[in-house]
Image (cartoon, rainbow, N blue to C red; front, side, top):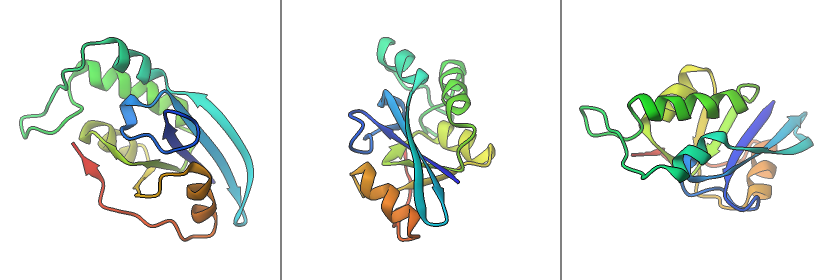
Length: 133
């Protein structure tokens, strides 16, 4: 099983999925972390270079529209081999895309990536309600 965590500094979970330039992925087998790798979050490049005015749905939720969908698809492509994505918060459009693709999104208050991986491997990672915007 692979678990992905978005991050700005490769140490802590990123505050916002789209604003995090990196994704750290761990492979967990039999309760042990057997591999760890870093990936570039390609959607971050567009998120960072465009003047960020979130496109919203008619209900006022964040992460909709053609530019957001394009960015989210690039991000999905980078972690499509993962089973779980851990975030602090993310837009509703990204959340819907990832969950529809079969990736479980876990929002957590745990900030350190190593601790997230250890807690996940032991089945003890606490979840909070996703802070969707």
